[in-house]
Length: 275
Length: 275
Image (cartoon, rainbow over the protein chains, first blue to last red):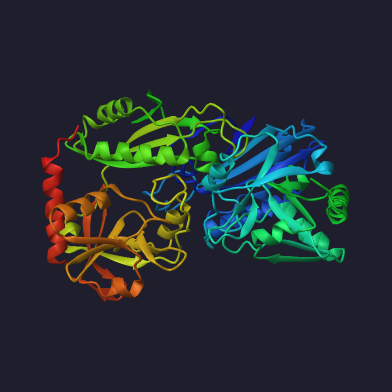
C-alpha cells in the first residue's frame, strides 16, 4: 500500500523533482508488532534533511498518522517515507512556492536469517567511492547512485554488505549500513562531515555508549586500522546490528562488546514507548 | 506531451528507481524548426552514461523516432530524454533483469533574451560545491541535488548563472552550463575527471577549436586565474554560447575569440544534417 499526499495510489507525476533530480529525502523505518520503531527520531532526521535542502518541513502528526495507518496490521514490515520538493520550477531552480510530495509506503520485512545477528556476516570492500560534499553529507537524500553502483559490484548472496571508502580513501560506511569497529575497548565510527548517512541506529549506539561508559569516537578510519580491529559490526534501522565476521581475507570474532551493544539496543527498543 | 515507454501519459510508478535513488540519466536537446539538434551526439552520450551505470543501452532508432514525433510540430522547443533503471530490485541492489523506463518529453523553449548572446550575462560564484566522484563524473545522471542547491542560492533574475567549485576549490562549471575562459589566445575549460558534466556543446567547442587551430586545454582552474581572464563564456545545448560580462565584482568584455567560436558553432549547426 502506498499513500501519496494521503491518497492511496501508486503513480506519481513525471514532473516530480524526485524523478527529475533526486530532489528529496527518505526514511526507512522498521515496523514491529504494528509499531513504528524510533519514529520520532526518523521524523527529526527528516526535518534536519528538509532544513538542509530548504524543503518545507512535513507535518509530523500527519506523517505519523499515515505511518500508523499503514503499520497497524503489519507484524514485521518496513515503511519508507519519501518527501520530495514536488513539481515545478525551471530546470534546477525550484518553484517560488514549493508543494512537497509526501509518499508513505509499506514493504515486506526483508527475510535475512535471524542467525546473522549472532554469527555475523561476510562483507567486502567496494570500488565505488563516496563523493565528498559537505552540503549533502549526513542527510538521507535521494541522490543514491553511489550506493546503487557500489551494490552492483557483487552478486554473491553470501556477501551481505559492501564497505565504502570516500574519495580520499577513508572507510565511511556500508552501502546500506553504518560501520563501527572495536579496538582496545574503544568504539570507532566514521566522521560524516563530507559523506555518508548519519543513521538512526548509529546515533542511538553513540548515545548508549556514552550512557554506559563505553568510550566511542567519530574519526577518520583507514582500511588498515579497520582490518586490525578486535570486532567490527554494521547497523541500520531494519537489521539492527550485524557483527561482521569476515571482510575479504580478514576474519573477526563476534566479540563481547558487540554483543553488549546488541543487548543495550534490544533493551532500549523494548523500554521505549513507541507510537 | 510526454511519452513513457512509447505511451502518451504523464505518470510513472512510485517504485521507479529514478524516484527512489535518482537511478538514471537524462539528455536535454534543443529543437529548432522541428529538428533535434545534435541528436546523434546526445544519444552517444546517453550510451556512455548507460554503460557507466550498467543500464541496458536504449534503442537509438526508437528514441530518435519518439523525439521526431514530439518535435515535428515545434518551431523552437526543448526535448528531455530520461532513461531510468526501471522498477524492482531489493533496496540499492538492482533487479536481475533490468527493464529501463524511457521518458521523452517536450517543453517550451526558455524565453532568454536573444541579446544575451551578444551582450553577455552576469554570473556569480556558488557556495555549494560539486562532490568529487570519478564513478559519476562527466555523465548526465539524475543525481542533481548539488545543482538544485547551488541554483537555490540566488533569486536575482539579473544573474543568469552560478559558477560552481569542486570540493577541492577548483572552478568546474555553471549550474546548467560548462564554462570556458580565454587568456593569451588559449581556451581553457575544466578537467572533468572527478566532477561535472561533459556537455555536448563543450565537446563541439573543443573539436572546433582543434579544427581551427585555436589552442584549447582542459585543466584545473583556480578562481584567481578565471578572474584574470580576457574573456569568459558558458555554454549548453539550449542556450548555445553566452559570453560572461561580469562575475560578481569583476567585469569582462565580450571578446573576439568568444565571438569567433559563436560563429563557428552557428556555422557548424547549419552545416550539420540534423534528423
